[in-house]
Length: 241
Image 1 (cartoon, one colour):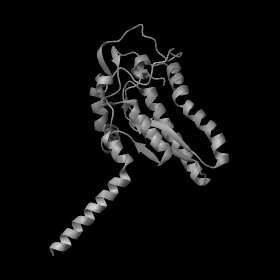
Image 2 (cartoon, rainbow, N blue to C red; image 1 turned 180 degrees about the vertical axis):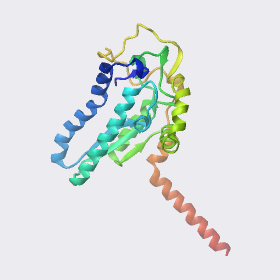
Image 3 (cartoon, rainbow, N blue to C red; image 1 turned 180 degrees about the horizontal axis):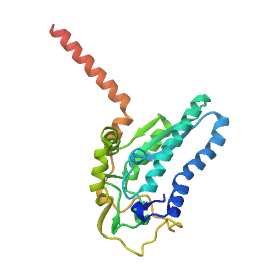
Image 4 (cartoon, rainbow, N blue to C red; image 1 turned 135 degrees about the vertical axis):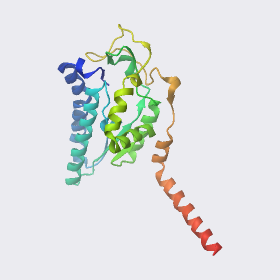
């Protein structure tokens, strides 16, 4: 994943182009390659990975947020076309929370302090399980993590208020723990070599489980339990009469 943490006034057109090529056009090219094989078979599931930033832009990540919005629009258009063609290919989008990945150890950053995802942070296994579930149980869209759901809901209700909140808190919430290393390699122009694993530097602060996702994954079971409890309550009321 390529990204840039920088105020937009310090961004260049070339940096925007590079982030867009990797993080938006990469989705498009990958999807087109998959469709070339899946459409003749009239089946399969394409899972696109997004986040709350597909709905709500935040400061310091203008190119990345623009990409997330673009992927959302691309998926909406493609989904309509698949429905029109009565295709058996399914398209789903999984909107993820902030994750403890190595991205923040090699992201290009102009921030004075070390870059971090906006807390609360989740382990990448939460995302992996959600993506796996989506590939076997496709719906139109999945939300993962209560904070992400909250950000989308608040943006729909009071976007102006959220603008002002992020203007005050959005800078500090994406930084932590002292000054950055000016000699640290980044992956904007070339790949950072080596196997860096799946986990980042936020192990002690990352959640390995999401109650919201558990409820989302088991919504059929929860709905059945609610109906059963309601039925039991109704029987109790009728019995008292």
